[in-house]
Amino acid sequence: MSEVCAIILAAGEGQRLRPLTTLLPKALCPVGNVALLDRALQRVEALGLPAAVNAAYLGEQVVAHVGTRAHVSVEPDGPLGTSGGVGLLRDWIDGRGVLVGNADAYLADPDRAPGKDIAALLDGWDGDSVRMLTTAPRPGRAGEFGGECFAGFSLLPWRLVRDLTPAFSDLVRTVWRPAEAAGDLSLIRYAGRYIDTGTPADYLAANLHAAAGTTDPTAVVTGHATQSVIGAGATVAGQVTRSVIWPGATVAPGELLTAVIRAGTDMTVSAPA
Image (cartoon, rainbow, N blue to C red):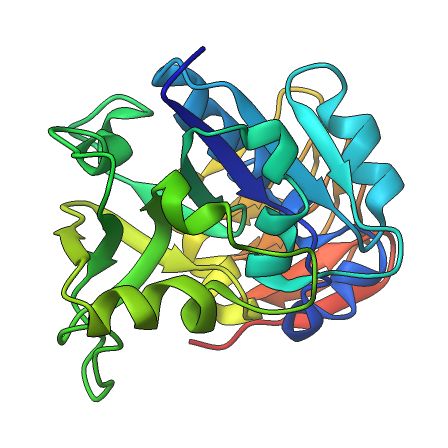
């Protein structure tokens, strides 16, 4: 049995991304034409870790999308929070350490292959302490842990995971702050680019960082697309600049879109910087 497994948290609704998340759960929203959940799974798969995914909001979509690639834990009465979601998976974890990642964390380092960026959490781990991937805070924003900001992934020992329950709670309260107070929290600075894709502006920024100027080969562009990401089967007859056009979406002739996300034929979400 592997000494470490991975859980990708994909149960959240993504309220700040509404109305986009009325169509897809946040974990399945595409960044650079790749679902956020797929990006996270690729990372843990590259490390050779067995993986589980939790699902709640629009959970049937997550279950269908994951298929047999990972174990799926469904929270039928709604999201249990980051702690409750891990607690529900205790039997599957079965004594192992757990690399827990948020599906909506966009991580990118052009100098490293996918998966290598989170490997620092595992290097030399003693199996007993809590490790957290962090990044420097944005200008004007205070650090959350020791002057640093959480960057989407943490490594938890079984001795703490075994006490988690499937009741609504978050890892800040049940694991991270107690570990910090006990001197058991280690912060691992992430060298690449991290974006929390929770808001339209940050979601757009992640897309443009990942694949600005990319058009899926199945898209039809008879208009103009500049520094944008055009999804599979999309139709662009108008003009789009620094925007994301979801798979199957349509931009009609005469439309001028700048710094937006377009889904379907008329759902347009502004994403000002």
